[in-house]
Image 1 (cartoon, rainbow, N blue to C red):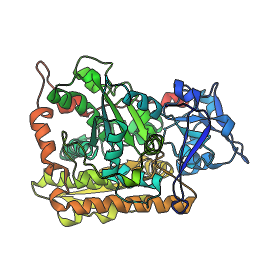
Image 2 (cartoon, helix red, strand yellow; image 1 turned 90 degrees about the vertical axis):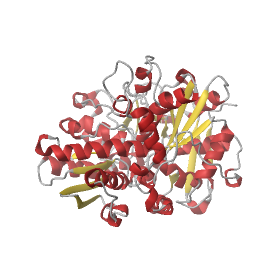
Image 3 (spheres, helix red, strand yellow; image 1 turned 180 degrees about the horizontal axis):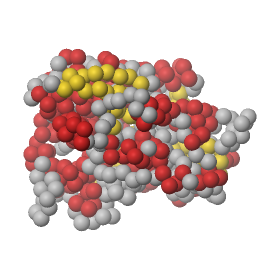
Image 4 (cartoon, rainbow, N blue to C red; image 1 turned 120 degrees about the horizontal axis):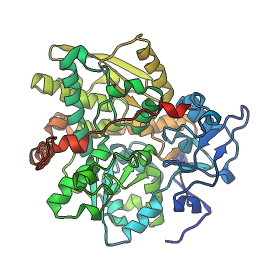
Length: 501
């Protein structure tokens, strides 16, 4: 494919207010930044948003910067990061890689670090078995890049496009979300049963930007985070172990590309410990997930390939790993992980199916900064909260640290609205358009889950997943004491407080 360093835009309909952009620079192609340490500078207060040249998730192109204050608003006011670190003191940028700066930049001066040119070349090389993992929220936002309304379900067209691009397998990450819930809900119930001896509240851990925020500013809370990996990293590790073994494929020949609404996945997949599949197979060079494409990048790939997305016939996900439940679908919404976990936790605690009010748990739905509730899990009353948006996270954690509030279980999503508001989503123009996009995507995910019905609403009812547990995850390998689930689906966190100077 012809490479170019020119500025390129792929526009959706004007009415949708969407801008999908791609810039292929020589620096991005080589994997480096734009040269020495650079800053995107703003008018007015002159405070810079710092981006290190080796940042794994976002890249700054100084020549395109118009010195507006958009990135400062995103990093400072929305995410609460910018005013909590001094690059002159630390000698490096303190970044949680949320990518909100790239989502809001109107000039493409800040973009995600593109993986798609490398993936395009990979797909043209027949030596690899290529696997795409599609996140829950992609199905209700990718269509915006092609002029469709917010929240329209383009699941089948997304699979068709990925197949047309050359992927050998396309799997639904709602399956990985169900795995996350099975592990996380069991961990929550275990902590509740141990009472005051356990670190409470338990926090969700599937948002890697939130995890890094905690590693920087709240390292004392790291024992409170669930040890469950995010759905994409869980599913990637199972693809390169159980699926590879079952299919007779050498794991070293499998390349996995995640399709996600966020930029921070690019950082998460690069964490040194995210090679559980490699350690499992005694080849530590094998990563759980090799590449991460934002939804914008996938739109660019489809455009580059001259695929008429709107005209595509719908194609189902490959079923080798099964499909996810309605609980997995709503993972993309703020409050969705909490709601999904409570359904399974209720079952684990009572042995019964959750009641209707837990299958549509209205108290933690919506877009309020923090939503609180109390839930009866058998004889226990569990105090819960869901929060999204970096600045809101800091506010809530300070209240928890000061013992002004107490919860048993807290869901945290760094991006406003959760994954539906991720930094790698199709761009919108203006605050009203951004909220309209989040509202439409949010409603779209709940509508898909509702159509599945109560019989498919909970992760523990996923029969395909139960089969993988029985066949592989609940078992131990010869000479090992830990189950495969513990070896592949869990992780640990590291304090980064010293980096703050």
